[in-house]
View 1 (cartoon, rainbow, N blue to C red):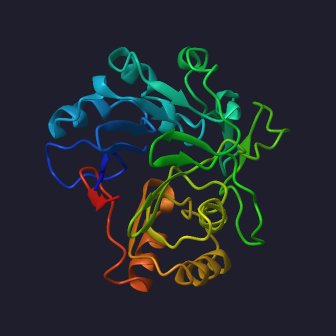
View 2: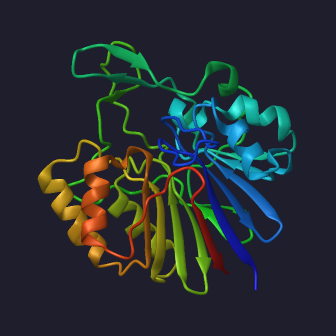
Length: 274
C-alpha cells in the first residue's frame, strides 16, 4: 500500500522550543515518493522548521496554494529558491491584489507578495485538478450553505469598494482505504461547503480526516452551532483544526468531538495508508 504522511510545517502555535510558529499555515505532504507543499506560511519560519524536521524542500514536486493571502503565500519566494522544479497549482484569482479592512477602519494589503505574483501566474486551475496520483484539488468551491461566509471584510481594492468573494479558495483531498482526507487552507468557502463538494467529487465516499484552517475565528453563535451540527453528519474519525479556526471554535470542536478532534500545532503528523 502507498503511505500518506502530512506534517504541519507552519502554524500559529508550536509546543517545542526548537519549533517556530507564525500566523500562517503550511503542510508537507508525502504520498509514496511524491512530495507536495500545501501553502507556504508567511515565510519567516518555513525553512527553519523544514530543517528541524529533516524535510527536503528542494525535493518538492508541487506547491499548492489554497488561496492568495500573504499568510499562505508569503514563503513562496523562499521555497522556490530551493524547489526549482516544483509545479505550482493555484486559482488565477490567487494572484489578485487583496485587502482587508479592520474594525478600526484601517486597510491593509494582504495578498501574495508582488515579487512572487508574476513568477507563478502561468500555473493556474479554476476547477478540480489532479496534482499527483492520489492527491486532487477542489478548485473553486460552490457556496451552497446559508450560514457560511468568507469570514471577514475582504476586498480587491484599497478603497474597499470591490468585495473579494475569494473564489480562489480551494482545498486538497486524498482518497484512502479508510476514507477521504481533506486539507483546508482557510476555508473561506465555508468548511461545510468544502466537505459537501469533496463528497460530490469523490462519489459520496466517506470523509475520514479534516485538517487545516476553518476560519471560524469570528463566527457567530448561530454559524458555530450550524457548523457543529453539519459536521456531526460526516462521522469524521480525525479532526485537526488549525490557524484561522480560532481558539474558541477549536475548543468547541474538541468538546463536540472528543477523541476525534486534536490540536494541529507545528510538528503535528498524520499517518495513513492509501
